Structures are given as C-alpha cells and as structure tokens.
Amino acid sequence: MLNSDLKLKENIFEKPDMAATRDGFGQALLELGESNPNVVVLCADLAESTRTLAFKEKYPDRYIELGVAEQNLATVASGLANYGKIPFITSYATFSPGRNNEQIRTTISLNNAGVKIAGAHAGLSVGPDGATHQALEDMALMRVQPNMTVLYPCDSEEARKATLAAATHAGPVYIRLSREKSPVMTTAETPFTVGKAAIVWESEHKPEVVLFATGPLLYQAILAAKELEFKIPTTVINISSIKPLDREVILTAVKDAGAVVTVEEHQVAGGMGSAIAELLAAESPAPIEFVGVHDRFGQSGTAGELYKEYGLDSSHIMEAITKAKSRKAV
Amino acid sequence: MLTEEALKNLELKAEAIRETIIEMLVAAGSGHTAGPMGMADIFAAFYFNILNHDPKNPSWDERDRLILSNGHIVPVRYATMAHAGYFPVEECLTLRKFGSRLQGHPERLRLPGLETTSGPLGSGLGQAAGIAYGARMDGKKFHIYCAMSDGEHDAGNIWEAAMFIGANKLANLTGIIDRNNIQINGMTEEVMPLENLRAKYEAFGWHVLECDGNNIAAFIDMVNEAKAIVEKPTVIIAHTIPGKGIKEIEYDYHWHGMPPNKEQATKWLAELRTLKGKIQSEHE
Image (cartoon, rainbow over all chains, first blue to last red; front, side, top):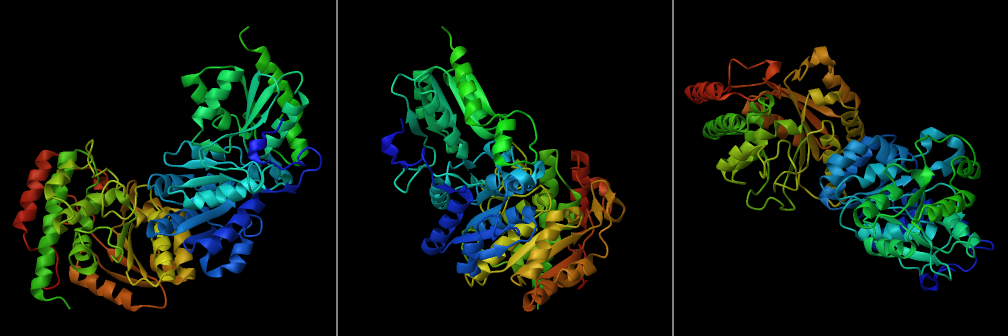
C-alpha cells in the first residue's frame, strides 16, 4: 500500500491528475521570481516548451535570451553565477547538457558555479520528435561530473519542489524534466529533500524485491507493485535524487528484500540503475534487473507505444520483478 | 597620459615578468612559451596600470575583472600576479607541479585572483558576458576585460558570445585579442583563416580598435578609448609578436606549446637582461 506518511494524492489509481514535470518547473520559477531577486532565467529559444515564458512575461528584466546557442547558454550562466546571480538555464536535454557538455564541465562543475541546468523533453516520452530529441544519456553525462547534483522529479509537484530546492543549493544542479503529462502522485505536503529517497509503496508482507524508480516511470513501478501485491511483495522507492544517492535508505531496503529492480527512462548504462549497482557492488551485492533503455536510440511514436517497444511499462516491470526474485539465492 | 617614468617602470615590469615566465617554464619542464612572452606587455599594463584591483583582497566586489579565455598562456598571468603582490614570486616555480595552486591551466577555486577556470578554448568570452550582464543589472561600475587568443576564434562559442554581447550592447566589457598569428598547427591564416577579423566583429555590433600589443603606451591608450565608448562593446585587436623578447623564438609557431630547456633558458635570460629597457617602446 501507499506510504501514508508521504501524504500522497488519494486518487492516483482511479483517475489521477495529469501534469508535466516541466509545468511544475515553470511554476517554481514564478515563485522564485517573487521570493529571490537573484534568480535569473536563461533561455535558448524555447521559452514556451521549457515553461519559462511566464517568468519572461512577469520578470522581463531577469529573463535572458540566448538564441539557439547552448554553449553560450552555459558559459554566460557560469559568468552570472560567478558574479553572484542564481541562473537557471533551460533547453532540451539533448542540447543542454548534451551539446554544451564541455562548457558545463569546465566552467560550471570544475568552477563549482551555482548554475541550475534544466534539461527539458528528456526521455522517450517526447514521442513524435524522434531520436534526435529524446535524451537518454543526460543523467550519465551529469552524474559523472564532480560537484554536480542530479535530480529527476517523479511528477510536476516534485519538480516544483526540486526547482525551489535547487535555487537554495550552493553548487550546480541538473534537473531532468519531461514534456509529456504524467500522473501527479505527490502533494504540497509530501516531503522533498535533495539526497533523500522516499519509500512510496510497501506490501503487507515482507518484501521479496525492492524497486528503485526515478522520474514519471515511478507511477508504472507502483502499478506493477500493486498488480503483484499478493504474489510477490515489494517495496517501491522514489529515487528523485540520483546524486547524491540516499545510501542509507537504499542499503536498508536491499538488505530487507534481497533483490532489486531499477526503473528509469534513460540508458541503463550510466543512469540511476548504474548508480545503484555501483553502490550495491561495493556495499551489499544483490541480483538486479534493469528496466531502462538498453543501448538503443529512440524513435518517433507516442509515449505509450515507445514505453511498450522499449520495455518500460508496468507489464515489463512485473516481468523484471519476477526475474529478480527468481535470481535470489535459495 | 603616462609620464616617461611611469612608462619606463611598466616596461621594466614586463621584462621582469618575462624573466619569471622563462624561469617557471624551465622549472616546470612543460608549458607554453610563445603566448605568455608575447602578452607580457599587456599583462604588465593591466596589473600595474589599468585594473582597479587589490592584490591583498582578490575577491573585492568592486574590482575590475580580467577574464583569461585562452588559459594556456596562464604563466604570464601567474608571473604578473606574483609581481603585483598576489603571492610570492618564488611560488611561480611550483607551476604545473603536484600540490601547486598554479595548475597547468588556471583553476579559479585553487588560486584567489583567477576570475575563471579556463583552458578548453572559446569559453571565456561567454563567461565575461555573464559577469558583465549581471553587473549591469545591478548598476555596478567595474569593468570586465576578456583576453583571448586569435586561434581560439576558430571555436563557435566565441561567436555565440560575440553575438550575445553585441546584441545586448555590453559596453562594460572590452575584449582583447592576442593577434599573434600562430596556433598549434601553424599560422592562423593557414590553419583556419580568421581575416577579416575587424569586419567580423563590426558585423556583430562591436567597436573595433587595433594596436601594437607590445607597445604598452599604445595599448593603454586603446583601453582608455574603449572605456570611452559607451554605446557598444569594444574589442582591441592587439598585434603581438609570439615569443616577444627572445629573437630565436619570435614569430615561430613551434614555440606555442614548448618550454625552454635549461641551456636555452640561461641563454634567454642573459639576452633579456642585456636588452634591459629595450623591450619595444615608442619613447626610446
């Protein structure tokens, strides 16, 4: 059952409210515009789709247009942070942190400059735009840079909180966002802290598998856990902070369950599952099944079609749970 | 206007900086020679005349910012900062060594007074633009300078930044291009032609000035003129001689990324010292 401590929405299984994580991001920028005069927003010709348009209209003096120039987006932001501003840079994740990865490495991460990077339209769910616009490696790019914090909110409300948290976090932060609407699971009362993981679902019986899910696919993980509730008891944990990881919560859960499924809309190589695997290999080895994209590029289609094709929906997660359980030492 | 005495003093500083560069490069056993030697006059002009700065308080909010975009010429910055009192001159001999604050390419977090981290080319102008934009938002009066190489104008980020700075008329920013015509693979006009550099910047909305970058008085005049232009940003194309001060390496692109050996260093230091006061100046 859902963890009542988290004050999650009550309607998530019947008719969940739908919103995109980019909407929560845009909402938070407006709040920051009001509360923090040092916040500036930089845009690379994508104001509407990255949800910076409302900030632009309300705070035009703190909105900076770069044009289609993502390298400069990163370097100008580094300069602004160096001077004392809190810059949020926004583009599609394939371009930022994709195209401008070296500028982020040298001028932001190595400088420990407090630039907040919002990578929008990440993952397969961008859909019809196709592989060129479906970032599947952005978390890997960001996670390997020292000083960088990596956040991947599970819904629009968590995206709002992650964005607010990023503004008060001293160093650089990457926030991964999706274009597509997805179920809103959390509420204003649900806690969010950088570096913390939350147990979202617990079966009545002792868990046999633990699921670590990140981003909107958390919803699919919960559906899978609920479906299997009386066959294979599980725990589902929201890993919205990929870096730093919540070692304590993860290691405790793995100790209890003994087998792991990771779920993410990203390449398995270098993503959240890899981060968990690195931690477990060093501290507490256990069988892991990785639900994610296995060394392929995306393609055009609807989000639903692509989740099915790439094995990311709840039925594939259920298969992974069964497999993870079967791999446990008897 | 500089007095003769003040100019002479700056030229002596430039010469001392060149000596330190040679000493630190030979101690390091690796590093870049041509660029730092060619830019010694400009760095002397900055730290001993142009910049409003405080070596004892390198993070002073109101200081002028000198951004070094082409980080590989950082020995000239280290040497100049040391002579200006940021740290002891002897520390220059730790260049590129384990545990040193003087990294092979400059890292802002390791040494107070470095404004940015640089090395990978093309990224300094954008950072300078960010500082200039933020400073203008807050009505700050300090000036932002960005020293670049000519070769790094091959990089797209420079032109993205040049377009942004021109569009936003960031007149509190002055670019300086070390136009020494060399890069690693050869002469800039053979590797990837940059000309007409003046016309390119003008087309991007900049005011363009040119001068002899090894003539300290001329360079200071240009900077003063740049600061008087308030309707648009200015770039100074400073024509310098790579390896300036050592006849056998001047103009030779092979010295871009090579340090002198001990024997060469001894000979060069002697050559510099016998030329005392003769490093190019108009007034002599």
